[in-house]
Amino acid sequence: MDFSTLAVVVVAGMLGPLLALPTRWRIPVVIGELVAGVLLGPTFAGYLHAANPTFAFLADMGFALIMFVAGAHVPVRDQALRGGLAKGALRAVAVAAVGIVPAFALAQGFHTGHTALYAVLLASSSAALILPILDSLHLSGGPDVLALLPQVAVADTVCIVALPLAVDPAHAARAALGAVAVLGSSFVLFLILRQAERRGWHRRVHRLSRERKFALELRISLAIVFALAALATHTHVSIMLAGFSFGLVVAAIGEPRRLARQLFALTEGFLGPLFFVWLGASLDLRQLGSHPSAILLGLLLGAATVLSHASMRLTGQPLAYGVLASAQLGVPVAAATLGTQLHLLHPGESAALLLGALVSIAAATAAGAVAARIGTAPPAPPTTGQPTTGQPTAD
Image (tube, rainbow, N blue to C red):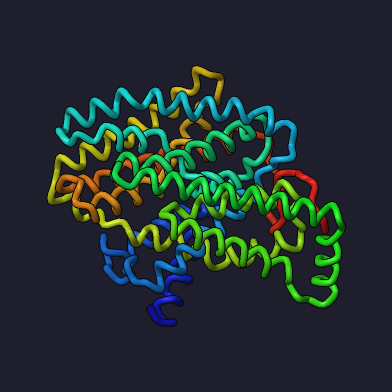
């Protein structure tokens, strides 16, 4: 990857804001970025190669920061969120239970024997997709959103941990230990940062950074995120867990507005769009043409995912939010990659997993537009680089 390719990636990422510009369309920014990656990737132009080490590494940085920013904007100190935590977690468990039957039916009907894998896919949600959609459509308040956030976080985290067990049971214990290591490290960081806050060390660092323009908080935050990402990588856990868990730590302590603005510029202006363009370029939908049965499998996987999450309407969740929670991509991409590397998937099955993910994204995009249009959540002011959750922050 060279600078000309990087320039193309940055320009291609602008398709996201362009498609999101007409407010009547209600298209989230990330959708345009994904489409740009698909158009420039192996499915069509073949210009971008997701396997390029530099491109993939920059995308990993973007993914870690997206999840960090997402976690930092979760209002963990809000009493309403704590009240919705149990409800969101129970809904995540209920979705997983509902998905077992269609997962078994699909595995038997297509003779793949991958019931456990399909069950994980049907239960998963993508925080990296859903949280930016909520933010871009200004759906960032209200009790329904505060119950949706923990539901998505629990589903995404558990499915990331459970995926190796479903695809490669021989190494499941290693992945579980890695998850414990990342979460344990995040908890230790929370204790350290809380002590620094109580003793006034954080305020002194913040004042020095602001007066001398050292950007110390940004530097320290990035160092911690990347250190946790390194731990996750070495222990074979998704860096999603590293970024999101430390984001929750920062949210619990209180994110300074200056740090929020700096992270917003770095993530939303460069590394975030680059990640979504890379993600689109990692999809090779041409495989579906060689295996017609995989098209049906992918469509049914996507439909089963949407219906499993939409069934939470029976628990009182608005239908639009239930469908929105079905958006997934990271888990299917990881499943397709891992399954292909280990030669565990049938011909065309990896493409079917990705097609199912695209179906869920399309449904979630439509659901987000409906939610924004009918006002199922109170509108929030446009994002200005500061947290939109209403939680207390330090200047």
